[in-house]
Length: 272
Image (cartoon, rainbow, N blue to C red):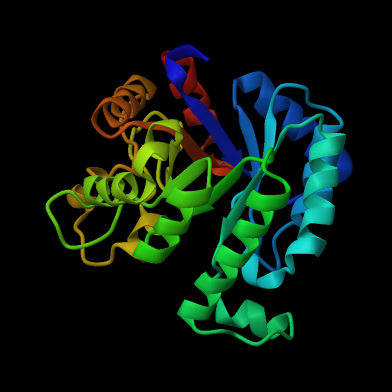
């Protein structure tokens, strides 16, 4: 793959089977390497959606970004994950997270564990797959020390948020933490970051910062534009920033939401 970069795109709703499959083919044609589905009540059901997309794509991988581990027992999750990998000819990436939305646990009639208990269960699920289905690539996304330690020990892909402790370069600090926790595994890990804001492709080059602002309420607009997870300017400017992130931090896997596809497809074209 040119420049050792990968690009993922997440879908947040599904209108019909035809719409989904046409969209999946379109994303593959645009150069996206991975189609992602999140795991929230009210969002599409990950496994049937990804199975339908697998029927009409051939090169694009399929991933969960990310499953709420607290919703699943490992053996039952493995039944779905392993068969999705089978019917997609080995193109499935299992993305896992600890879960954080209390209202979703309540709607699912599940107890809402403490943060520590949710991370314990994430480790339990991750170890289960690592021991029994080691050929299935695992992505773990998170920011805290314990989640990143689990990711460093067991995952193939680590999803970083670009934020962290109050230090001069929070992303570098988190990557250094992962490096120390991973030891000899670090060089084999793939580092991912989700792009939270990008221009709408209307020519203005100005990104919509509303999503970024939810998690960075203390930052000014100029400070948010400088975040690793925010792209602005022309597609060439966006491509230059991704090159910088690769060279400075070793990030090689970037994901966006479907509302950023038009702009980001042009970024991909600049990089390939």
